[in-house]
Length: 466
Image (cartoon, rainbow, N blue to C red; front, side, top):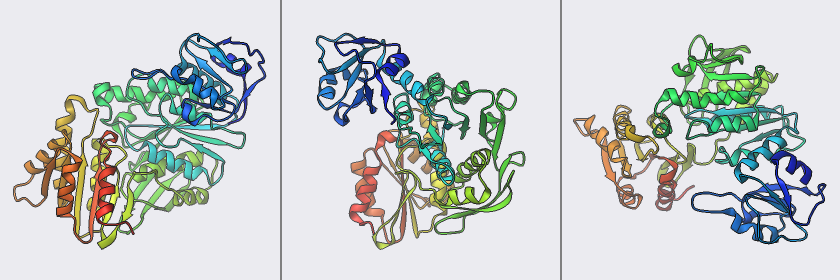
């Protein structure tokens, strides 16, 4: 982070200065919301939630070196050598300060949102752009009203491009984030069933995702999945120009064919504004063509050559627990896709498992959360998909996952797919002991709240990683 002054903090937040310190040229070197990670000359921002109040840790943050703090209310006493800025809402003030800080940099910002594939697309875009630019990207799950500002505070003078992931659970959240980020380009990966419990329908999800364009100028660029019928309805509704990507003939950047017959990569025949070319993709799953094509569109927009773009794709590394391939003893392979799940991503992961080499294919699938009343039926449809994909064994784990088990059993008459249901991960371990064999390939996937990586760790404990 580049230093910012107390004067700038007051200007950005509209806050009121409290305490004895009146030197407006004091600078802070970082902004943090966690008193435990406070560094020297930081600004502490105490957050307030249903079960916590960061104001209780202001004293600790200042003792650990913070130069000052925001506060949502007046305090009982003030240190003589620290500053205090009173604001109506510390979370909103964090966003206001991040928006102010972002405007200090002549950086191009690419926003990434969508129901499925946001993080993979963000990582792919950053990988491609890094071939030509100094790039900042969202790390981990910093894609909400706290994480996005924290990411923006990592901007420094050397950065030329930032790739910012935006998540949401409710209408209005991306509208808030996009006005902070002010993106120059925005990618929407697709419109699916994620968070449908809160949003009610895919049409509402579309409206919520399309809020990303509210913070863009008319000169901004929309990069949209042309194979998604709901996104296609934005054709005449946006003031920004649109670049479409996908497999359809009317896509600007298009996958014409995909060869998945390799152990450690795929090869896509692509066409678009750069001509026609063969693109090696270091990963598995047909869904990855969309991340590659979106990244190609952004790279072309920023003036990159085809050689630079294709090389950037080759340097792609996925984020943790997103189809990580773990090689274990006895030829066992684990596909750790445990970071999160919804019906679309679950089916995509099962399809990857079905095409993966291995003598025995096991799908360990857990609950998909935030699906509301549609949850049971959507879980059941995943179970039916497992059977249709030719998986050898299903282990369904969790309360909702019983519907995956029921869907799989109902879709077969001959018992070709070995099916197990266990309510808890602890009970599922005994089944893993029973079914894992030499050269087995095992997929582990569920929503984040299920922490399915615990079963990945258990597999590694009984079949040590090589």
